[in-house]
Image (cartoon, rainbow, N blue to C red; front, side, top):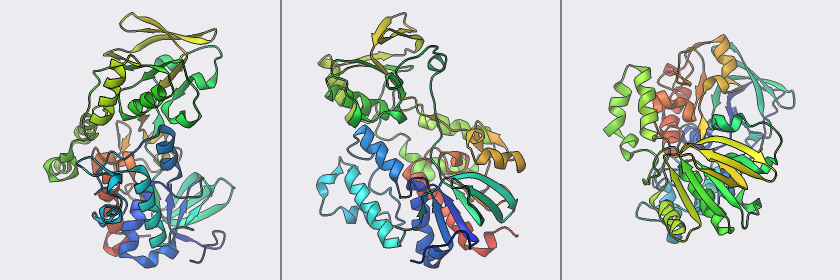
Length: 405
């Protein structure tokens, strides 16, 4: 494939981000319009596909996905199962959850098949300026400036959320002794004999707890509610008409936002991970503190002193906050600038987009969790990427759906 010279070309389509959402979109788009390959460019500071996704799975030592094998970047829902026919040991449980390596290999094959190996520019987009309905100026991390007719933003699920009590800590402490889960890499943690507090009750906290116990640490899992298990992070009814018909028919954006929050319900663990934690609890390596929150935390000498809402005072060597991320368009470095010049309604941090996930009046598309008001609770998941790609591909390929210059 001929590599585009960015300094000499006006791009038709600029895609910001090279994660699963962006890969899914291009798989859908190029199935309908293979000739679009020469008209698009992907921008990601890593310079390669799925780097952050792969690093996260490796850092948490996640053995398999939570989504069944029908959810993946290819438009053909059966493609991953066919790919894994000779590797049935890599499909886990009754729902055929793909093993991490199987999924990576499948994605690598998809990238090669579509000819996408050389489409990712190793540059971050630092500024996005709207010039017109179909005209955007992108300033890159190397100070290069390019123009694009259409832009797709697919850059992750939000800013790491830290509980307020941890944001108010004063004084110095070793940086590796208090981390958000997004900063933790189990492969580099040496914690034998340590006491670790993990705050949060989602699947990430479960993976971190199991990894810490395997390294001979003593773990306390603290969650503001009751810890519980369910197979998926949102009810399967959200993947089809059972719930989505009513969601799409709901005219009130506030009600839609509440549906997204309620469906995801603050995080849960899979039954398999929860069962492992119960086993570690029985052996004394994991302690559950449920319906409990940290109220006060202080670094003293070489450990943390923590008082929780139960009034219990404890000491820990490390604290990991597996408290998720906060979706807020006003914290997005690119979209907050767009909002300043071309405002749209914002509901609980989520922008109101049109039905094709387009910023109103602009050929600017948004994927991932920030598209939750249109796609629903699974917007940030692989299934949501597939639904979003259907909508965006239609707007990119059908002249009748495109905005005028």
